[in-house]
Image 1 (cartoon, rainbow, N blue to C red):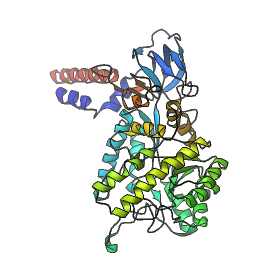
Image 2 (image 1 turned 180 degrees about the horizontal axis):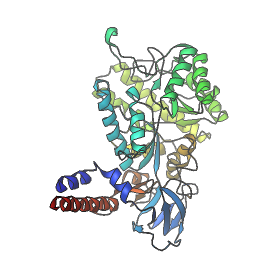
Image 3 (image 1 turned 180 degrees about the vertical axis):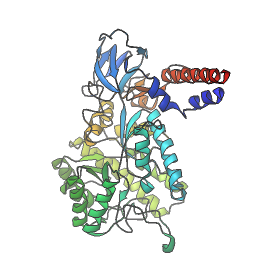
Image 4 (image 1 turned 120 degrees about the vertical axis):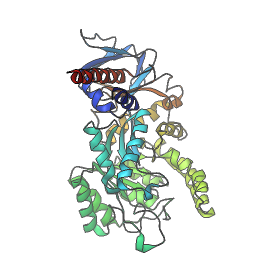
Amino acid sequence: MKRLLVALVLAGVFASPVQAADAPARTAYRAARLLDVDSGRYVDDPVILVESGRIVSVGSRIAVPDGVPVVDFGNVILLPGLIDAHVHLTGGPDAAARSQSRNVLYAARSAQNSLFAGFTTLRSMGGPAYSVIALRDAINDGDIVGPRILDAGALVAVTGGHCSGPRVYRPEVAPTAEGVADGPDELRRTTRKLIKYGADFIKACITGGFVSGTNPNQVQFSEEEVRAVIDTAHGLGRKVAIHAHGADGIRLAARLGADSIEHGTLIDDEGIAAVKKGKVYIVPTVKVMASSVEKAKKAGASESTLLALAAARDAQKRNLAKAYAQGVVFAFGTDFTQDGSNATEFSALLELGLTPLQAVQTATVHAAQLLGQSGRIGRVAPGHFADFIALRDDPLSDVRALEKVVVVVKNGELVRNDLAATPLLRRAALAAVEEAGEDHGHDHAH
């Protein structure tokens, strides 16, 4: 039994409960440098004092109180835990064929992949049967290891629209997604229902998409329907993310008070002006569009679809580069994350004209502001959650350094540590298991 428990701890099955029991209430972390993501300056010899999952103090060579254990990571660079503001944790090529319970487990693995890649907070666009809300709550309760998740519950769409369910050609078996509704009254009711069952924000798909067989330029909601979703969500204290590729949809969403535009692929000059006036964030999801042509080829897409995707990819870069140059604020989002490759989006942002620091800011301070979480995440600062990561190389010299995270701390718990053969908190878990095994044997002796 003792060997089995040790094996399970090493595999991570019991990682969270044992870590929570053994992690000290106060811990100090040291490294060679800390990136101040606001200024772009480095703090030498930083010390981060953490208590009960929050940062108490941080600074260069600050004194550590007597009795507080110190974790010294050595010659690495620390920066805040990263934020991906657009993920689909239950996605993938076989998503429609999975059972709901299997979707939760799939989402758990996807979320952990993102966490170990340095993304300590995710904004998830929902999942079948509120599956990601269940995952979010399991992580918050300490049942399993995972990132902090804000979830939409389900994607809001109109019948036949983008996000309304998988494409099928037999209407008698066509599934209908939880968030599908038509008309202002139904959409108000759906928005209220999603919030009732735990949605942290609302995501509505008001234009077509490139892979759903719908027209990305076409606005699929009426103005009254869009207003019903946004006003209802805001009235209940929730933000609204609007999927919009086409220029008409972008302008409409910005004018009616959306908090973010997801993708923004075909934004025009009027759209840029409307987004700036409304202080709306754009979550550009550049990488997924850049790779869409190859993925569509593998999936057997038609020639017309391939041409449309290639044109959209090129237009996206031109339009979003112009939008950023004119002062539109971006928040980091990938539109994927099953494999933990979130950080490849950073190099794609540089192709739009962002500097490495500006790219990092999209996934820290700006994403935190979009999520309504400023003061809690996005910075290594007193009062914030103790979420930070470590890199061996300088991300401001080469943004691809962010693809090689070696340490991840979330809520003050060390969840990844490639700098030691066995993570420090995992070693504490092993010690606890060894002790439990000895106690177990002692009981049997009596």
